[in-house]
Amino acid sequence: MRTRTKWQLGILAVLVVAIAVAIGLTAQQKSIDTAPESTAPSEPALAADSHLLSEGSTDATFVEFLDFECPSCRQMAPVVEDLRAKHGDQVTFAMRYFPLPGHKNSMTSALAAEAAAQQGKFTEMADKLFETQPEWGGKQDSQADFFRGLAKELGLDLAEYDAAVADPATTERIESDKQAGEELGVQGTPTFFLNDTLVELETLEELQEAVAEAAQGS
Image 1: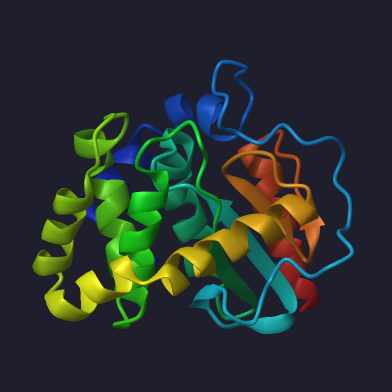
Image 2 (image 1 turned 30 degrees about the horizontal axis):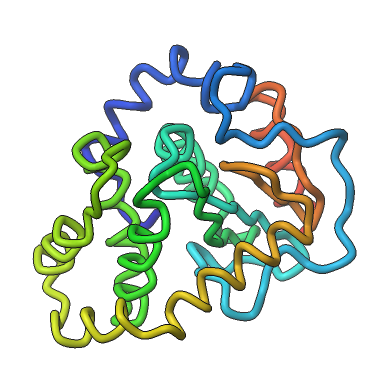
C-alpha cells in the first residue's frame, strides 16, 4: 500500500518462512485459492469501483481478491506492496473484497475498510486491519468496536463511519465484489488476476517475473 509499516518490514525479514503458506502450497490453509490452471475470465477482474493502489497502464492490471481476516492475505500484503512499489507506474494495482464465511469478522472488517474508503482512507484502514489482525483474527464475537477504534485512530468522522457501516448499500458493495469474484472463478483468498488471467501461484519468483513482464509490455 502507500506506506510500508513496521509489521510489513518484519514480515519481509522472515518471508522465506512465510512464503510456503502465503503462496498457497500448504493444503492445511483452506482459505487459499487452489484454482486449476490459469485461465482468462469472460469479464475483466478490474471493476470501475475497485479500490486502486496505483494507477499505471490500463493495459496491465494486477487485482487481488482478499479477506482481511485471512492470515495468508496478511502475509502476502508486503509482497504485493513490494510489487506495487516496483511496477506501480506501469501496472494498475487494485484490491477487491472476498469475505469468507469461515471467518466470523471477515464481513465486519470489510465493512470497516469500505466505510473508511468513503472518507478516502481505504489503504490506511487496510494497513491497520492487517497490522492488528493477530489481535482480532479468529475471534468468534464481533470485533466491530475494535474496528471503530481503528477508525478513530485514523481520524475518521465517526458519525459518518457509523452511518456507512450500518448502510445496506455498504454491504451490497462488498457482496458485489464477492459475487464478481465467484463468477471469475475465485474460490478462496488471496487470489490474484494479472491482466485478467487467474494466477496459479507456484513460486514467489514466478509471480515477480510475471508482473515484471506485464509492466514491460504495458
